[in-house]
Image (cartoon, rainbow, N blue to C red; front, side, top):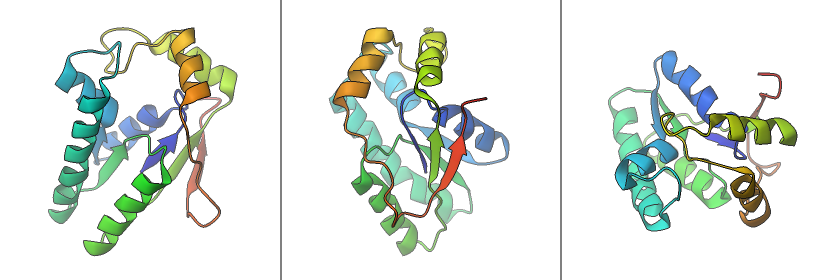
Length: 153
């Protein structure tokens, strides 16, 4: 599981793990593909895609594949759900907390906003709205995790 705030480098890390042989499942990319819109997230589509990815990843693990879940995991309940499923199918699970300084996250979001990179378009207002309005539940002390600081790239 890859967890972190917008622009922290979650997808970049997930792509690196994919290059090492894992199957990467990206909520943003699948949602954009399903909705055809990389400017505005349709939350109904996001929820349907998320539900489908949560049904799909255990199938990949069941046939011996490693999976990188690039689903943001801003809610503890989502992380717990993955842990419960992993326990049932006897799979190992790691939580990678991707962190980055705020100014660098903002810079990355402004830089990545082009229509062909598989991510949502973002301007300063969008970044600020997410920072101010989205509840992000950071891992508690009872959640094993690995911190990956991507500030310097």
